[in-house]
Image (cartoon, rainbow, N blue to C red):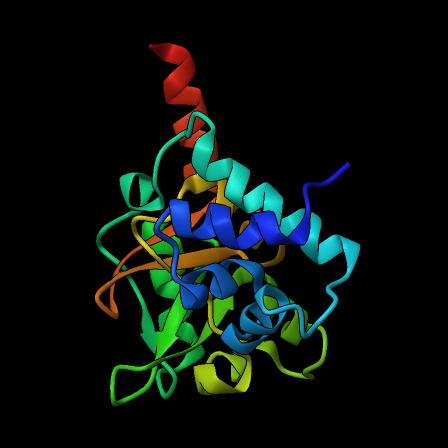
Length: 191
């Protein structure tokens, strides 16, 4: 049985979480949190359970922060680069995915081995695909989370996205993939 809704606000404040930050963890708007806390909205059971799970993760022993396991040098491509450049970077670094930036240095998408191979099935001449721009095959941008976010909160995101970008004061500082989680777990076992 879950605690009462009133408990959400008390625990959020006790942990020093702003409504905005808490809302971002829940993938809802800040106004949704305000309405729930002011009893103007009756949330679903799933949302309440997720909210308490997140609050519980802050109070339980943590496996660390995403900034602790993030790869600090973020290798990326621009949306107007040709796909062959992305393939070269993927192979050179042994990555499965890369974030994509635009000319203004905004993070606008992602490209992966999977997105490229899926497109190969849809073209008559695969070599021509390599001359097209990354923007033609890129997927959604990776989510961004603060580097001081507990790893336990990043794991659900990595179930839906191939990577997450870490940020500090709005600037991208690193990237975390499922491979980084596996490496972290295996290095913990070795200790």
